[in-house]
Image 1 (cartoon, rainbow, N blue to C red):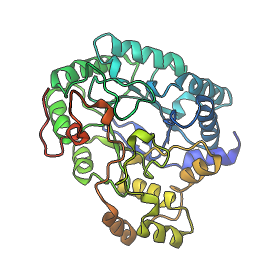
Image 2 (cartoon, rainbow, N blue to C red):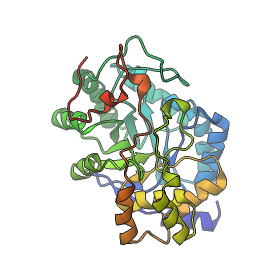
Image 3 (cartoon, rainbow, N blue to C red):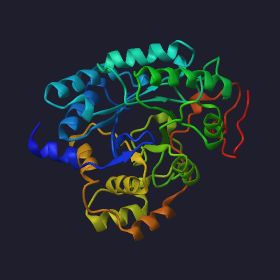
Image 4 (cartoon, one colour):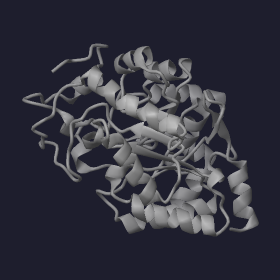
Length: 339
């Protein structure tokens, strides 16, 4: 690692979690298993960590943690200290039951070749499973609506992991305000972060503010509108952030790709974006976007108008019985549907 790359890593801003610990203000996602191989993704991680990335967002269900672990070990052998890295992972839906949470965490630690995780999320608040590459119409026969008692059973195991030191922080993902209120009411250890879909055409202002007001750091996935998302998450009505006229105009003003505008917007708004790319030019420009030429207050205000409430990662494969409307998963009216 050369001095210039070390300098880039040192210049990346940080956010402060409610525990007082720091987390990089931008990271790199590693979900791409529907489009790219584990080797392609792990090599991108190696290039990214060498360039200056320090936050990596992983998950057991991505089926690439073992290869990512190899390159993280290689990076440490090249002089990057473990303490410099902030590594996240997630518990998949088929590992929510008592005992399984610990087993899942242990496998992730073994695969990533780590002694501890900086953050562990519950990937989805359901035990509804789907196999990798599932189609929209696929259903797990045991799928059912959210059950808070089940979720808290899982959360208690997450709390145990944090107390044991295997995990330094625990968090939630793909939640709603209604579900989060119940968790905050009943938990012993509060979530340090909430991973949620956030991009200019899906700003989730109310949920975003709820998290900030409760000292839960929003981590935004799909920050540029997830152009490489799985086919099962695509519909004809999806809005394309990178083609929005205002985003394009602001990009021209700054002489950058529209994706960079989306990332700058995310950083300046306060969420932690975790863009994914296997392409060196793209992941380098994503990181460098936070270091100079910020969007103006006027541009930030104008970008509020891009919001279309367009959720891209809809979660259709987690539906149950004869339910076909994915909106029921997200409690949009503030009501959690029981089984």
